[in-house]
Image (cartoon, rainbow, N blue to C red; front, side, top):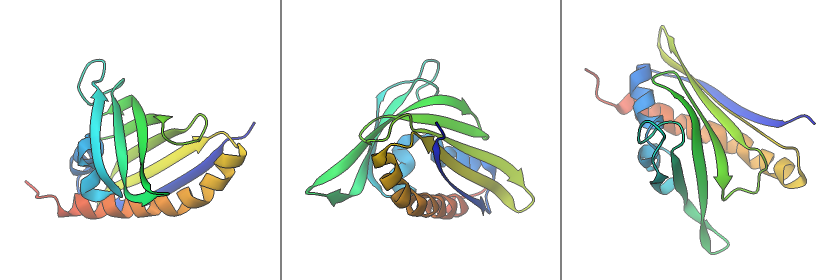
Length: 151
């Protein structure tokens, strides 16, 4: 069975370390993304924000009278390079897995945020919204990374 897929790519005029600082700590996601709150439910196996860490993100907008809360688990974290996570709660998508890849570029950091999940009916419907969501998230991340103080 083929997986559904969505991704966004862009370049931030910032170092990989500046971008990493924003994506490696989920509590910073509300600073640059469409979330109103974020917290860690449990630490990672070898570091607070590393593999095994579980965190929740609360949407900034209400849908049907309530906030959407998504729970994610970090699978891999390579400092300044790569973050892989899965959704373990809050989204009705089966086997959702995402990867954020950072690559140093002449003009800053190339960012690729991609996700796959099972092609269920709900998954197909969600894909439409995620095709809009991913570029918005990437734009917010890029702007925040570029606004970070250097040095």
